[in-house]
Amino acid sequence: MAATRFGFRIVGGCFEERRLVDWSAAFLAYCRCDEQAHVKREAYLSAFVFGPDFRKWLDDTGSVRDFVGACWSPWIWWDIDREGDIEHARRDTARLALHLDERYRLPDDGLLLFVSGGKGFHVGLPTSLFAPEPSPIFHKVARHFAGVCAERSAVTIDDGVYDRVRAFRAPNSRHPKTGLHKRRLTLDEVLRLSTDAILKLGAEPLPFDLPEPIGTNTEAVQDWLEAVETVEREAKAVAVRHAQSNGKATLNRRTLEFIRDGANNGDRHRLLYSAARNLGECGSSFELAFALLSEAALDSGLSPNEVRRQIECGICDVGKTEGNAP
Image (cartoon, rainbow, N blue to C red; front, top):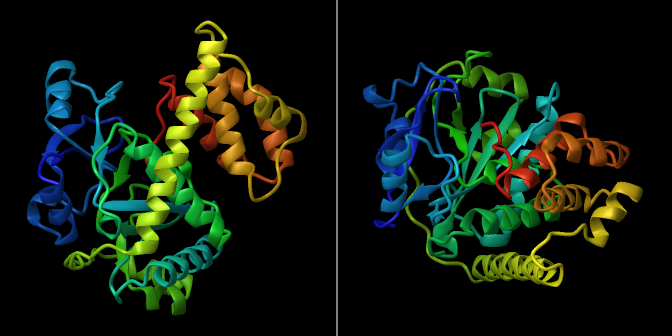
């Protein structure tokens, strides 16, 4: 969308400066291994795209922190990491990709699939399938939409990549630790190649053209609208709780139940995130939320990294912390 064309670029680690860019032009440059992209270096682009208010915010403050304006994206991203078990990540990536391909009847190259160069894979679904508008809650709707697709596929994903000003590894860029590039893969490669063969492909960048835009899909439109309704309903529930407590946030029943009982496999990511966000609304620091929630989350079967990510994401959503880029 022309009105939301701004993003940021980071050359080097995530501690480096966020530089304003025309997001689509920068993304395409990385896809095509343009000389100006410097794909032999570590680099990130914003996961979402913004309007002129973002440009003014960055000019005025010199930082992306605390920006609360509308955002949008031409892609919904999934980040699938499995520490020490990239074969597990490959299988989960294949399962999610097949689900998306079947549910939304995609053309052969409709998805953007990458080996990330690090611990796993990235999956991109074009938002032209449901033609969403820019919104201050777009990133939250994207999180819910992505989470539902992941749950249908029985795949665990990193929910932290849906923070409004999240940095996301640029296509073809080089991972600083492994030396591998974020290399595009076909669905057939994800399904049929061994992880060793896939990692060998990541030794070098690969220029590629973006898929042609895809028209809307009835199932995708409905799934997106349901995600919008869920996020709006949750926001209204928070507002009601605040009003009933005279503006003071209170712990809700689900948070207390999670601390006491944890959660089942299908709900544990969502309920941990929800509990962390509720604690953040009550003014909790990350440290306190982690102390209250981590034992139940670990007992529910989540890994230590997944526990930390979900709690960081929940606290971040009420402006208390920022996540790290994948």
